[in-house]
Length: 103
Image (cartoon, rainbow, N blue to C red; front, side, top):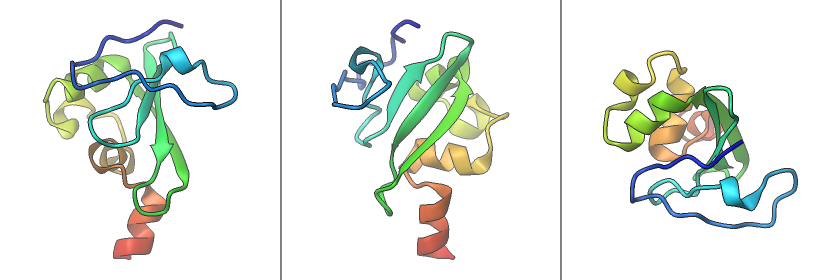
């Protein structure tokens, strides 16, 4: 496992979480989303839903996530990722939070 180098908008944020090395966390833009490189070409993105506060996670292709963070639209950068997971990356809203808020 190694650190990903994302855009300058990213900041390392350490938190007291179990089973996750704090040095592998990166804060994504202004949302409380974090990325952990899994070392197999994928990255686990996780954090609280902005509506429910419950933690949500998804696994996405690392190259696609890097393209998304560089400004490529999520639909273009991550075409193999579900619409629900792309929405979480864009807005911080989990599928459960979306359903509870918008029906």
